[in-house]
Structure formats: C-alpha cells, structure tokens
Image 1 (tube, rainbow, N blue to C red):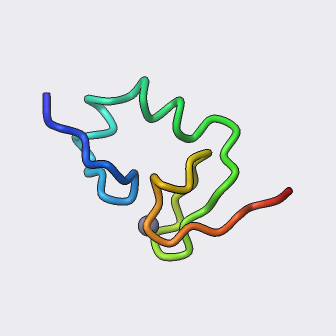
Image 2: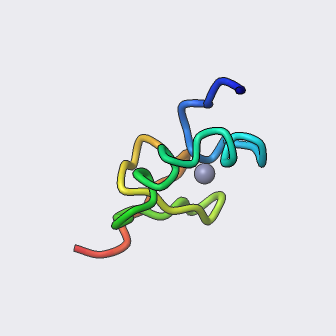
Length: 55
Ligand SMILES: [Zn+2]
C-alpha cells in the first residue's frame, strides 16, 4: 500500500488501485473539474486548479 497524495491530481496509477474506495467517494457526484488535469471531484481541495462544474 502506498500513501495517498492529498490531491487527486497527484495520484498515480497505483494509488487508484490502492485507494479505490476513497476514489469512489471523491468522484461520486463530482462538483468540480480540474482545469489543469481534467480530473473531477466533489471536493475542490482534491484538485490543483478547480473549477465548478455546475450549480
Ligand atoms: Zn489538477
């Protein structure tokens, strides 16, 4: 098991596998998208350049 980086943007391939449950929670009902990485999450703190998807 590897330690999970704080931001989803910093996760590597192995992190998704090791922290799948956390990933599910982060991306479920995503409210933000990262303008830099194209990832999405419901917590803007998980993204390095978050933008709101919709109200
Ligand atoms: Zn990012």
